[in-house]
Length: 76
Image (cartoon, rainbow, N blue to C red; front, side):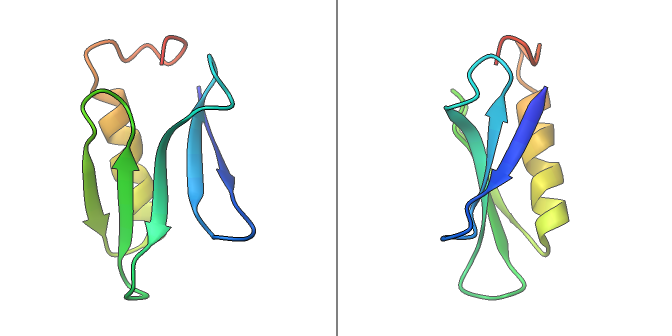
C-alpha cells in the first residue's frame, strides 16, 4: 500500500510505502510553471517525468512504482 502526505510548508507531495512509512519512495512537486508538475521515483530505477496536472503526475508515479519487477507493495 502506498500512502501520500503533503508538506504544508513546501507543497511537495511525498509517497510512502507500508513497509517503511518514514522513507519516501517518490514525490510530486509543482515546477516553475503552474501547469507543470514534476514526479520522481526514489526507488532503484529512479524514474521521473513531467505532467500537466498533479493528478496525472501522481498517476505516473504510481505506475512507475507498480512497474517494478518486485512490485509487491508490502516489500517496497
